[in-house]
View 1 (cartoon, rainbow, N blue to C red):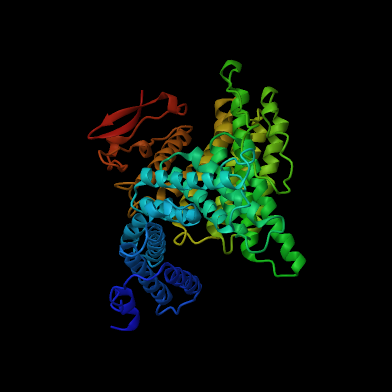
View 2: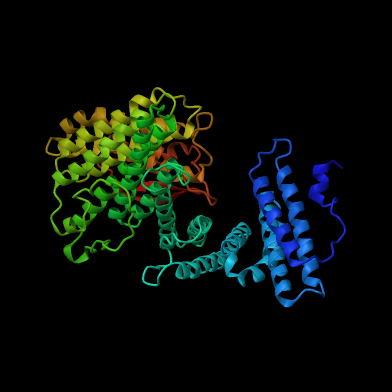
Length: 576
């Protein structure tokens, strides 16, 4: 065996030591811990990534063995044995951490469990107690024992609170306050506790509490780094901003748009500070930071779109059914950042006022501006997926706005704009390389074509049947062509599919029905209407049924006049 393997296996251990006096044990403890700190900072070669950690482990084994000998020594008094037991616990805790760092979780659990009782009796080892509890929480979470992980991490939080109460006057202690008189290491460990608690609550599906602890973690990062934004406590601003965007998404889903905007404004402030710092230093502006700004723009786009949808739904609802907006006056907020003011339309006060189309358009323009900036970075040549993500969001945004516009001609024009957004880039991408994106775009285009056909039919409602049919024929052709282009992607050797993947079923059936509706505006047999839903999870197309399958579908067929009808061994669509 080479030396590293021998160190890992413990083959170089010396024989059990005999008890020494307390002073000698203290000197050994101090020198061992100092050496361990240095070893943890050592960069090992890739061929032996844990060489220094194995050396650290052997030093800790030796310290533990000596401490154990002193605990068992008959000559030592009770106080000396108690101190030796604490040194043994320190060695066990550090070995547990060592085992975790070298990916030996099974060995880590036993050492950490053994260390905790003695450590908890010492007020001088609060930092090590918190670190040990944090690590036990991680191990429990890794074993999917999420309830246990939460209990352990709450114990870690309680230990910090005890220390904080001793460190500051009771009037100033709030459990999660700065407690800056405590050692720096303790503060760093408690920030990790907050971070782990956010994950623990998230693993249990307690999203609100997870968001609360995430906010505390991020605020502590801001407090630790200070106003300069650099130094020993500087954090990865891109990661911080990413977490803020995640929190904004949570608040937006929860209907708390004020908190969502606050989180996005905080992310914007942190990213802007970093940009200013780089400019002041004359450094090169990294593309990764530009990408973070682009993702921020997408999040703003989502926020204003969701707010538009919510305001519109609130305005349409009967007065008695309108839910009062959430009071966010006591919601947690980030402090220490230069934030832009909240937008006037994102206020609980405006919910008591009529929602005008002008206000809806203002929200649309806010979102559209962010969509444009996001596309300026996520260009089609190089960011196909991200580019289409923005395009689809922008198209959905327009769909929401046109749903509020009473003018049919303007709605038609907005649908044309949605088509332009999707059609041009669709012709520039490789369908084989981006199959799902291509199919989704085809489906969106077909759906838009169907909407345009309906609006055109509405606009021509006063015309005679002959004249109306002649004028909408081109729009029927466009809708039919678009739906068939989408449905063709599911065909197998020119025939309808035997089965459609579960994630595509809704789109496939919707396209079938919209195609039927479009063709229903003509006088022709609609064999395309026939399909059956199999007993499994897929959607199966009906086989050719010849003349028996041909349905007499009149020009006036609408989905409201269509019912499910069994044809042979399948289920088809037939007129009443």
